[in-house]
Image 1: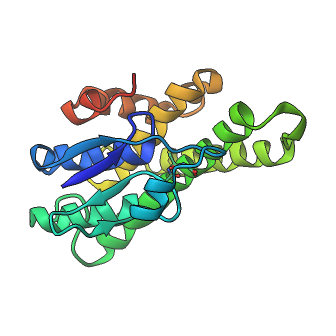
Image 2 (image 1 turned 120 degrees about the vertical axis):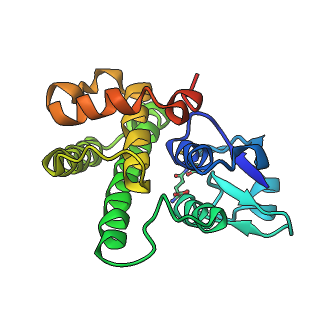
Length: 201
Ligand SMILES: N[C@@H](CCC(=O)N[C@@H](CS)C(=O)NCC(=O)O)C(=O)O
């Protein structure tokens, strides 16, 4: 399998961490891929992902699987033990809801990265940026209130990648000062092999 990849992307990291946790990483070739707003990459949009986003997974019969959440579901299914995503029952929907909220943190943070770092200053929209920060804070508070210690399921992997991205791109966001439980939880998460081996440069 080939994973279209950039180490800085939290969505890619989620897939990469999932592959490590599932013991599948040796079966995956990482294909370095550059996508970003304003930079055309026709080979990638024509052949791999019409949305021009990473990650994408190419499986051995040549089919492409998108997006990060579907890739994680595919890997989880492939591995057969369903350790990342419970197969059924209320646990499945609880985990997938947390997964969606953590993905939302990543969406908002990546969006703010584009808005504040890439968009020319005169075109920036502060209201939009502040709303994204509000979404991120509300979602972090939601996780803080859960007081969960679990680290194995996709919601937790996704949350770890979201927090890692905030540290990587927005070091002065200082989320640890506001979310004490998450701070301790992230400290333990950051000692795992999957988290350490997927850290962006
Ligand atoms: N919903 C997608 C989001 C992926 C995403 O936003 N990836 C970013 C990199 S972190 C990207 O490819 N951005 C390029 C663009 O939007 O043009 C997923 O879960 O895979």
